Length: 247
Image (cartoon, rainbow, N blue to C red; front, side, top):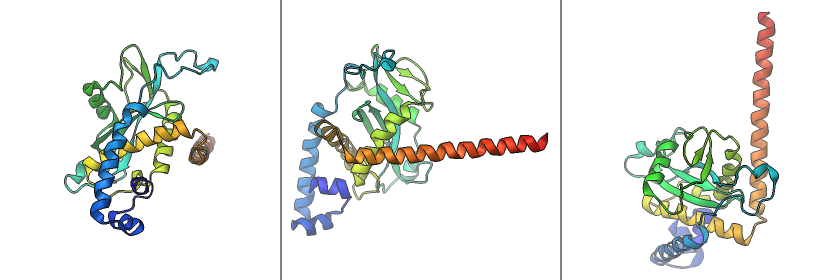
């Protein structure tokens, strides 16, 4: 029932009908399993010594202390009060989720819960204040894009970081519908659900590295990048024509 809810974002009454269980039973066991999955985080949501361990590609030889790529994403949530604080630039009610991702499309750190209107840099600042053991800062660093500032433990602006994060976040949201659509859970529970989805995401990546969903994500990202390139080419062609007309 727990996975059924995460994968399809079904409401209690739908699960109640399909599994022939009372609404109280569905709610109670969903909460129990959610707490158990969160406890699995100590086994599946972990930091590598360095992200380059096990990689022999020469192009990565200069990234020996690299821990992963760091970026933010928005997840739609259900909010009754203070909706304005959770409204992002797309006019969606969402939470801003900070995630650190490895090259093998796993999460090494995740921090959901902040309002969608909050800048990525401020969410990162909160992560630093927390001093979480999953977010080490000593003598190692994350690659970040232009949304963050360059400094100790953060190498910016590094545009290539987007590919790592887009693949991880893309797979993350494709598998769990509850991360794409606004759910009926309140903020506190939804934050726990986001953490649970990240833990299950990593578990699946360990047990099933050849993931058909990831292949779909790569195709979608490839199409999106091609559209961007074509759009930029159209702009360049337009600028050239305008310059020729001026001459």
